Length: 103
Ligand SMILES: [Zn+2]
Image (cartoon, rainbow, N blue to C red):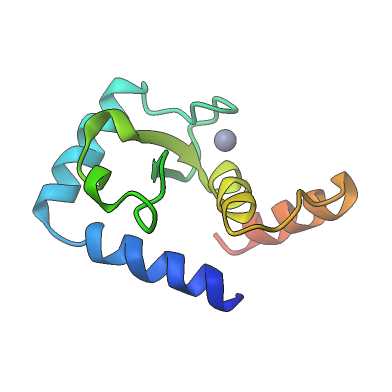
């Protein structure tokens, strides 16, 4: 993990602790039908801040700024946000495979 990614994780951890977040996350899951909004899977769902907490802390608990993503789509989105380019398809597939094995 790069420093930038660690920094992002630290910001969102401060938000994703606590009952307020758990309630919002549950609401977002219900709204998005317990599925990833990008690929539609029901596996390993995470609640994502559309506009990242680091750059938009005021939107941390804004319902419309939340979306449900699976682990894969979430990782891809974060990767682009921290300024990495999109991986070539072959490498991305390999990463996805590794992620799935960590279940
Ligand atoms: Zn997905």
